[in-house]
Image (cartoon, rainbow over all chains, first blue to last red; front, side, top):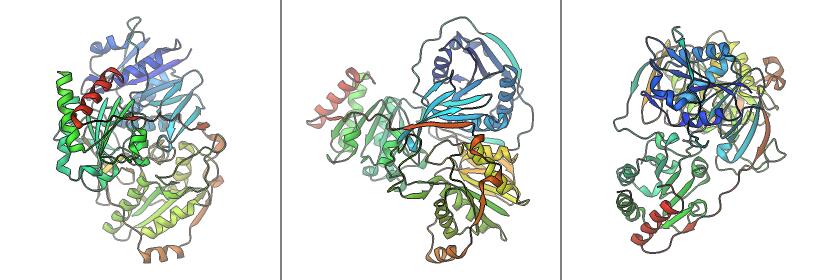
Length: 314
Length: 256
């Protein structure tokens, strides 16, 4: 048995669903689990965290995310609670926060884990964009891990109500300060944590044609992605790129429209539970990698698909 | 300003990667490139140099002998100097950051240090922030927009859902580039010729304090992931095909 800590991520006050994956992972093996939440009132989230030993509520006058303050606070929690392993989500925030924590603690970090053995402090993560898997051993007093979203099976919260403890947010002045958050005009779904993604490739032909995919995405509450070819041609923005030099995504359903299926793209989405390919070219390599394929023009198929799904989902 | 850019040499994005002996990859037929995110870092370093007269860009690369080719690429693009930290060992992110910090920290007047947000081989995405830790510098990662007047830096970084964080910090600092920050230039013929004449400074790993024995993260094993079974194309007319697909997604795959 070990003392395990979790960084619970809130997004505008909502409990991110990937937190449940962390909790499910940590509850296994009978460890003493301590969940750290930065918020003014932890009560609304306690139901989600049944079965953990304690919840550490970090409070302060200004709880807005400042990575240096957050990292210093977490380092203190890890010290005080003698946590031997500490886990977070491999999210935009996790990618920013955990390496800083690793620097402060001089601790080994394995990022983007698909599996973690807390007993042995070993983890498996994709390398070479998922072309290979690497198994790592963390040495030293403490081990840090960030876990890829949508990988760990979620088990319902069960067990006793955790004990709530409080900790003050580090008040030090950050050297790099977040001065503003610019929200996107359209509320996009975050691709790295999306459950469904609709993606377009070179065959989209023009930027405005992505509206066809956005219509389908709206019905599915999906994110919209793009291949490198579509981004390089100027049809899509670089934050939409899925692939080796873009985002690595892991949804339950990935619908690739007019994407040939170059390895560059494939490695960014291959762990999707189900891949659907729509392409005019029956020889497109994407069909070898898709679970379901439709040979046809995406501009015919995608609107039909949208109507059919709308009908089915009511 | 003494501008630094840290780069890594990695296999080409199109390369098939096969495991050789459980802990390394088969390097035969692998084409080596500068990690794509590091190219954005080089470009931003060169743009900053052009903006601030009297600046100098030094590229630093840790790796075996072949890593010198990555440095030649940076020089051909316009970097003024190059440092090769000679290392055939497999270092973890802490050790790599330690070696880079040793080289850059020796220059009392270093300014902005650019890196890519991750190298596309181990995909660890840690060295930039660990380097900032080693040198006690402010840092920002996943950077899509960069501005610097010589003393202060203002960046924008992507944080998902299309939102961006705006961060301000003072020079010296660490900036890790994302795709979209800029369009890296191609090396000109003149640049390539000039690059050949620049001597690459070599630093033995042992001088930097980095040591494989100090790795906190140790690679145990590399393996190829299980391949997905090949899928099926649903035949028929568009309307019927779409109906069948939705049915299978609901009943067979259970993802709708």
